[in-house]
Length: 153
View 1 (cartoon, rainbow, N blue to C red):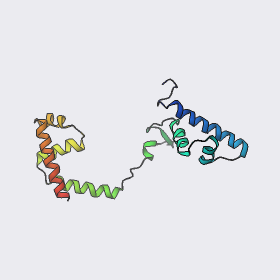
View 2 (tube, rainbow, N blue to C red; view 1 turned 135 degrees about the horizontal axis):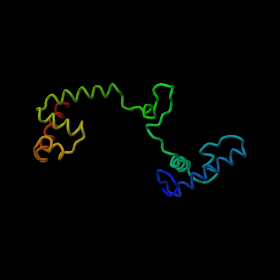
View 3 (cartoon, rainbow, N blue to C red; view 1 turned 90 degrees about the vertical axis):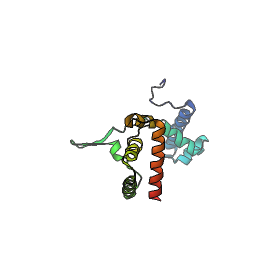
């Protein structure tokens, strides 16, 4: 925090970024055009990958809740601009398959799988909720996953 940054960046990385910025400014003054990363790398003798990494490291972080557009109505946030790379159709088919596989479980096993994998609870937390031991949760979970795997295979 000594440099008033929210993320600590090493001094050597920061120095590399500032060298690249300085080299870019000098290049523009001399050639009256923007240099490529390769040209900056050649000027300061540092690999272009290291320059890109250093320049990225000194960028200020942005909040996912940062508004990027507001048309006097609902604001559009950074989070709204991030998409899931997984195909939606693929996800839909997976969800249908999981639902079908879970129908082959007992009510107790289905409840345990739901708590563990859909609500993110630990085996200890599930044990407390279901009022059984953690070892029993582990065995029931393992059997349920085996049953689901057999159905999905």
